[in-house]
Structure formats: structure tokens, C-alpha cells
Amino acid sequence: MTDPTASMSEEPRLPGFDPRMLEALVCPQTHGVLTYDAERQELISRAAHLAYPIRDGIPIMLASEARGLD
Image (tube, rainbow, N blue to C red; front, side, top):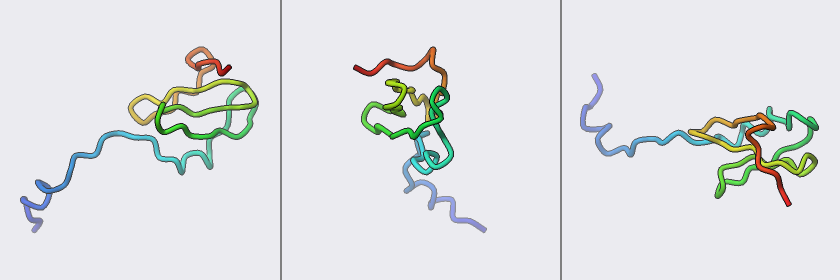
């Protein structure tokens, strides 16, 4: 039997991006490496000059949703 008070002390987990996903993800345009910007919650493709947003822990890998980099 589990202790019902044990879960009370745990903080609720917010959805977040797992950086280990970078091992499997590539830029959809260039098929190049992505880097994770935790502060802005984006995946950066330097080759494509795009930043793909991460929403609720899910990377949105669509060029139409990406922000252009300077």
C-alpha cells in the first residue's frame, strides 16, 4: 500500500522539454544540429537561422512557427 501523504510533499511536475530529445531531433529544413535555449524555450538551428518554439514541453518543428534569427 502506498503512503497517501508521500505525494503531498512532492511538487507538481510542470511539462518541460527534456534536453535528451536533442539526440533524436534535427532541424526539419537543414537536417542539422539543434541547440536548446532553456531561457527562451526554443530549439535553435544556426544553419537555418531559425528558432523553433517549445510549447508545454513539445517542440513545434514547423518553419511557419519558427522565429528568424538575426
